[in-house]
Image (cartoon, rainbow, N blue to C red; front, side, top):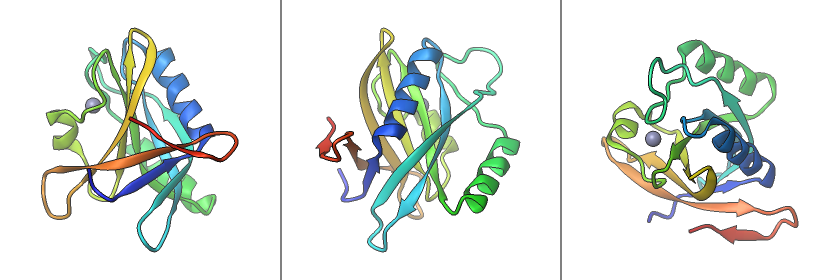
Amino acid sequence: MSNLTVKLSGEAVETINADGISAFPNECCGFLYGTESVSGERQITLAVPVTNSKEGDQRRRFEISPLEYMRAERYALQNDTALLGVYHSHPNHPAIASEHDLAVAMPYFSYVIVSVMNGEIADHKSWRLKDEAREFVEEQVFIESENSVLNPVS
Ligand SMILES: [Zn+2]
């Protein structure tokens, strides 16, 4: 575990969880927006589902089209927020980043994975590419509950 931290607002987590459950047994995916402090701590305030554009079997794969990335960047600019990452679900699979996730990951982004076991939320983890290396570092995930108390997950 690294000292990189990602805090998810209660609202963002609810969106991610609902998307993961409704897409089950397929993978869902979406964008993560928020702010980053000078010390590098990330606060995700908003999660926005996008269509999984992967053709064929979506139980083990997701894909976000270049057009959606363009729209997401534009949304961030217009709403004075930052596009900080992408979330997706792992149906009946742990929230561990796969070889494929690593192969397609982009620098800087936080990759939040929600594990959905038998249609129920099991776990959240987040991954970020190590600087100048094709290797993931696990970020610490904190979920901000409605009363603003921070609860470490997993
Ligand atoms: Zn994955």
